[in-house]
Length: 148
Image (tube, rainbow, N blue to C red; front, top):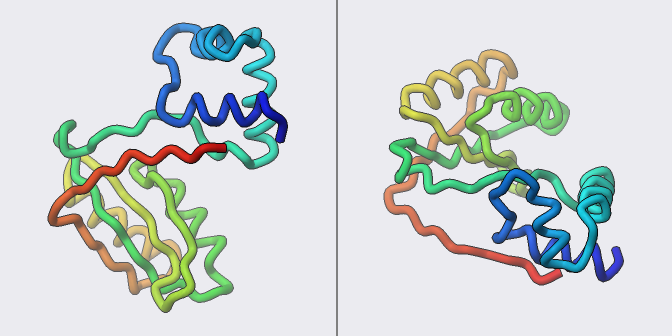
């Protein structure tokens, strides 16, 4: 990763332009052309450095509910389980942990009933029945930027 890549990553973490030409605007801020920014971001996505570019919203302010889920997934079902979970639009991310409950994921929806139904569907589709729904009792939002 070169200095330009690092500068782009540092810039887009929390200050991605909301405009009709965000890569042009980033280019101006970083003294690059729009095409240079697009090429670098595309390459970083292809290399797996950037997983996703998207907005983060405070779900409660939008009258949505969110929850943290944890599942006990046998090792031979992990890939299949994650594929099924990731197919639900309300799942924002998931991760593997070294624990009996080894797959954790967050789920956001308009109503908790939607999440409850989705978790039942996930259990039916995967055969994984031990899925905990752990809604937050109090929300703490911490802004985190990682200097690259």
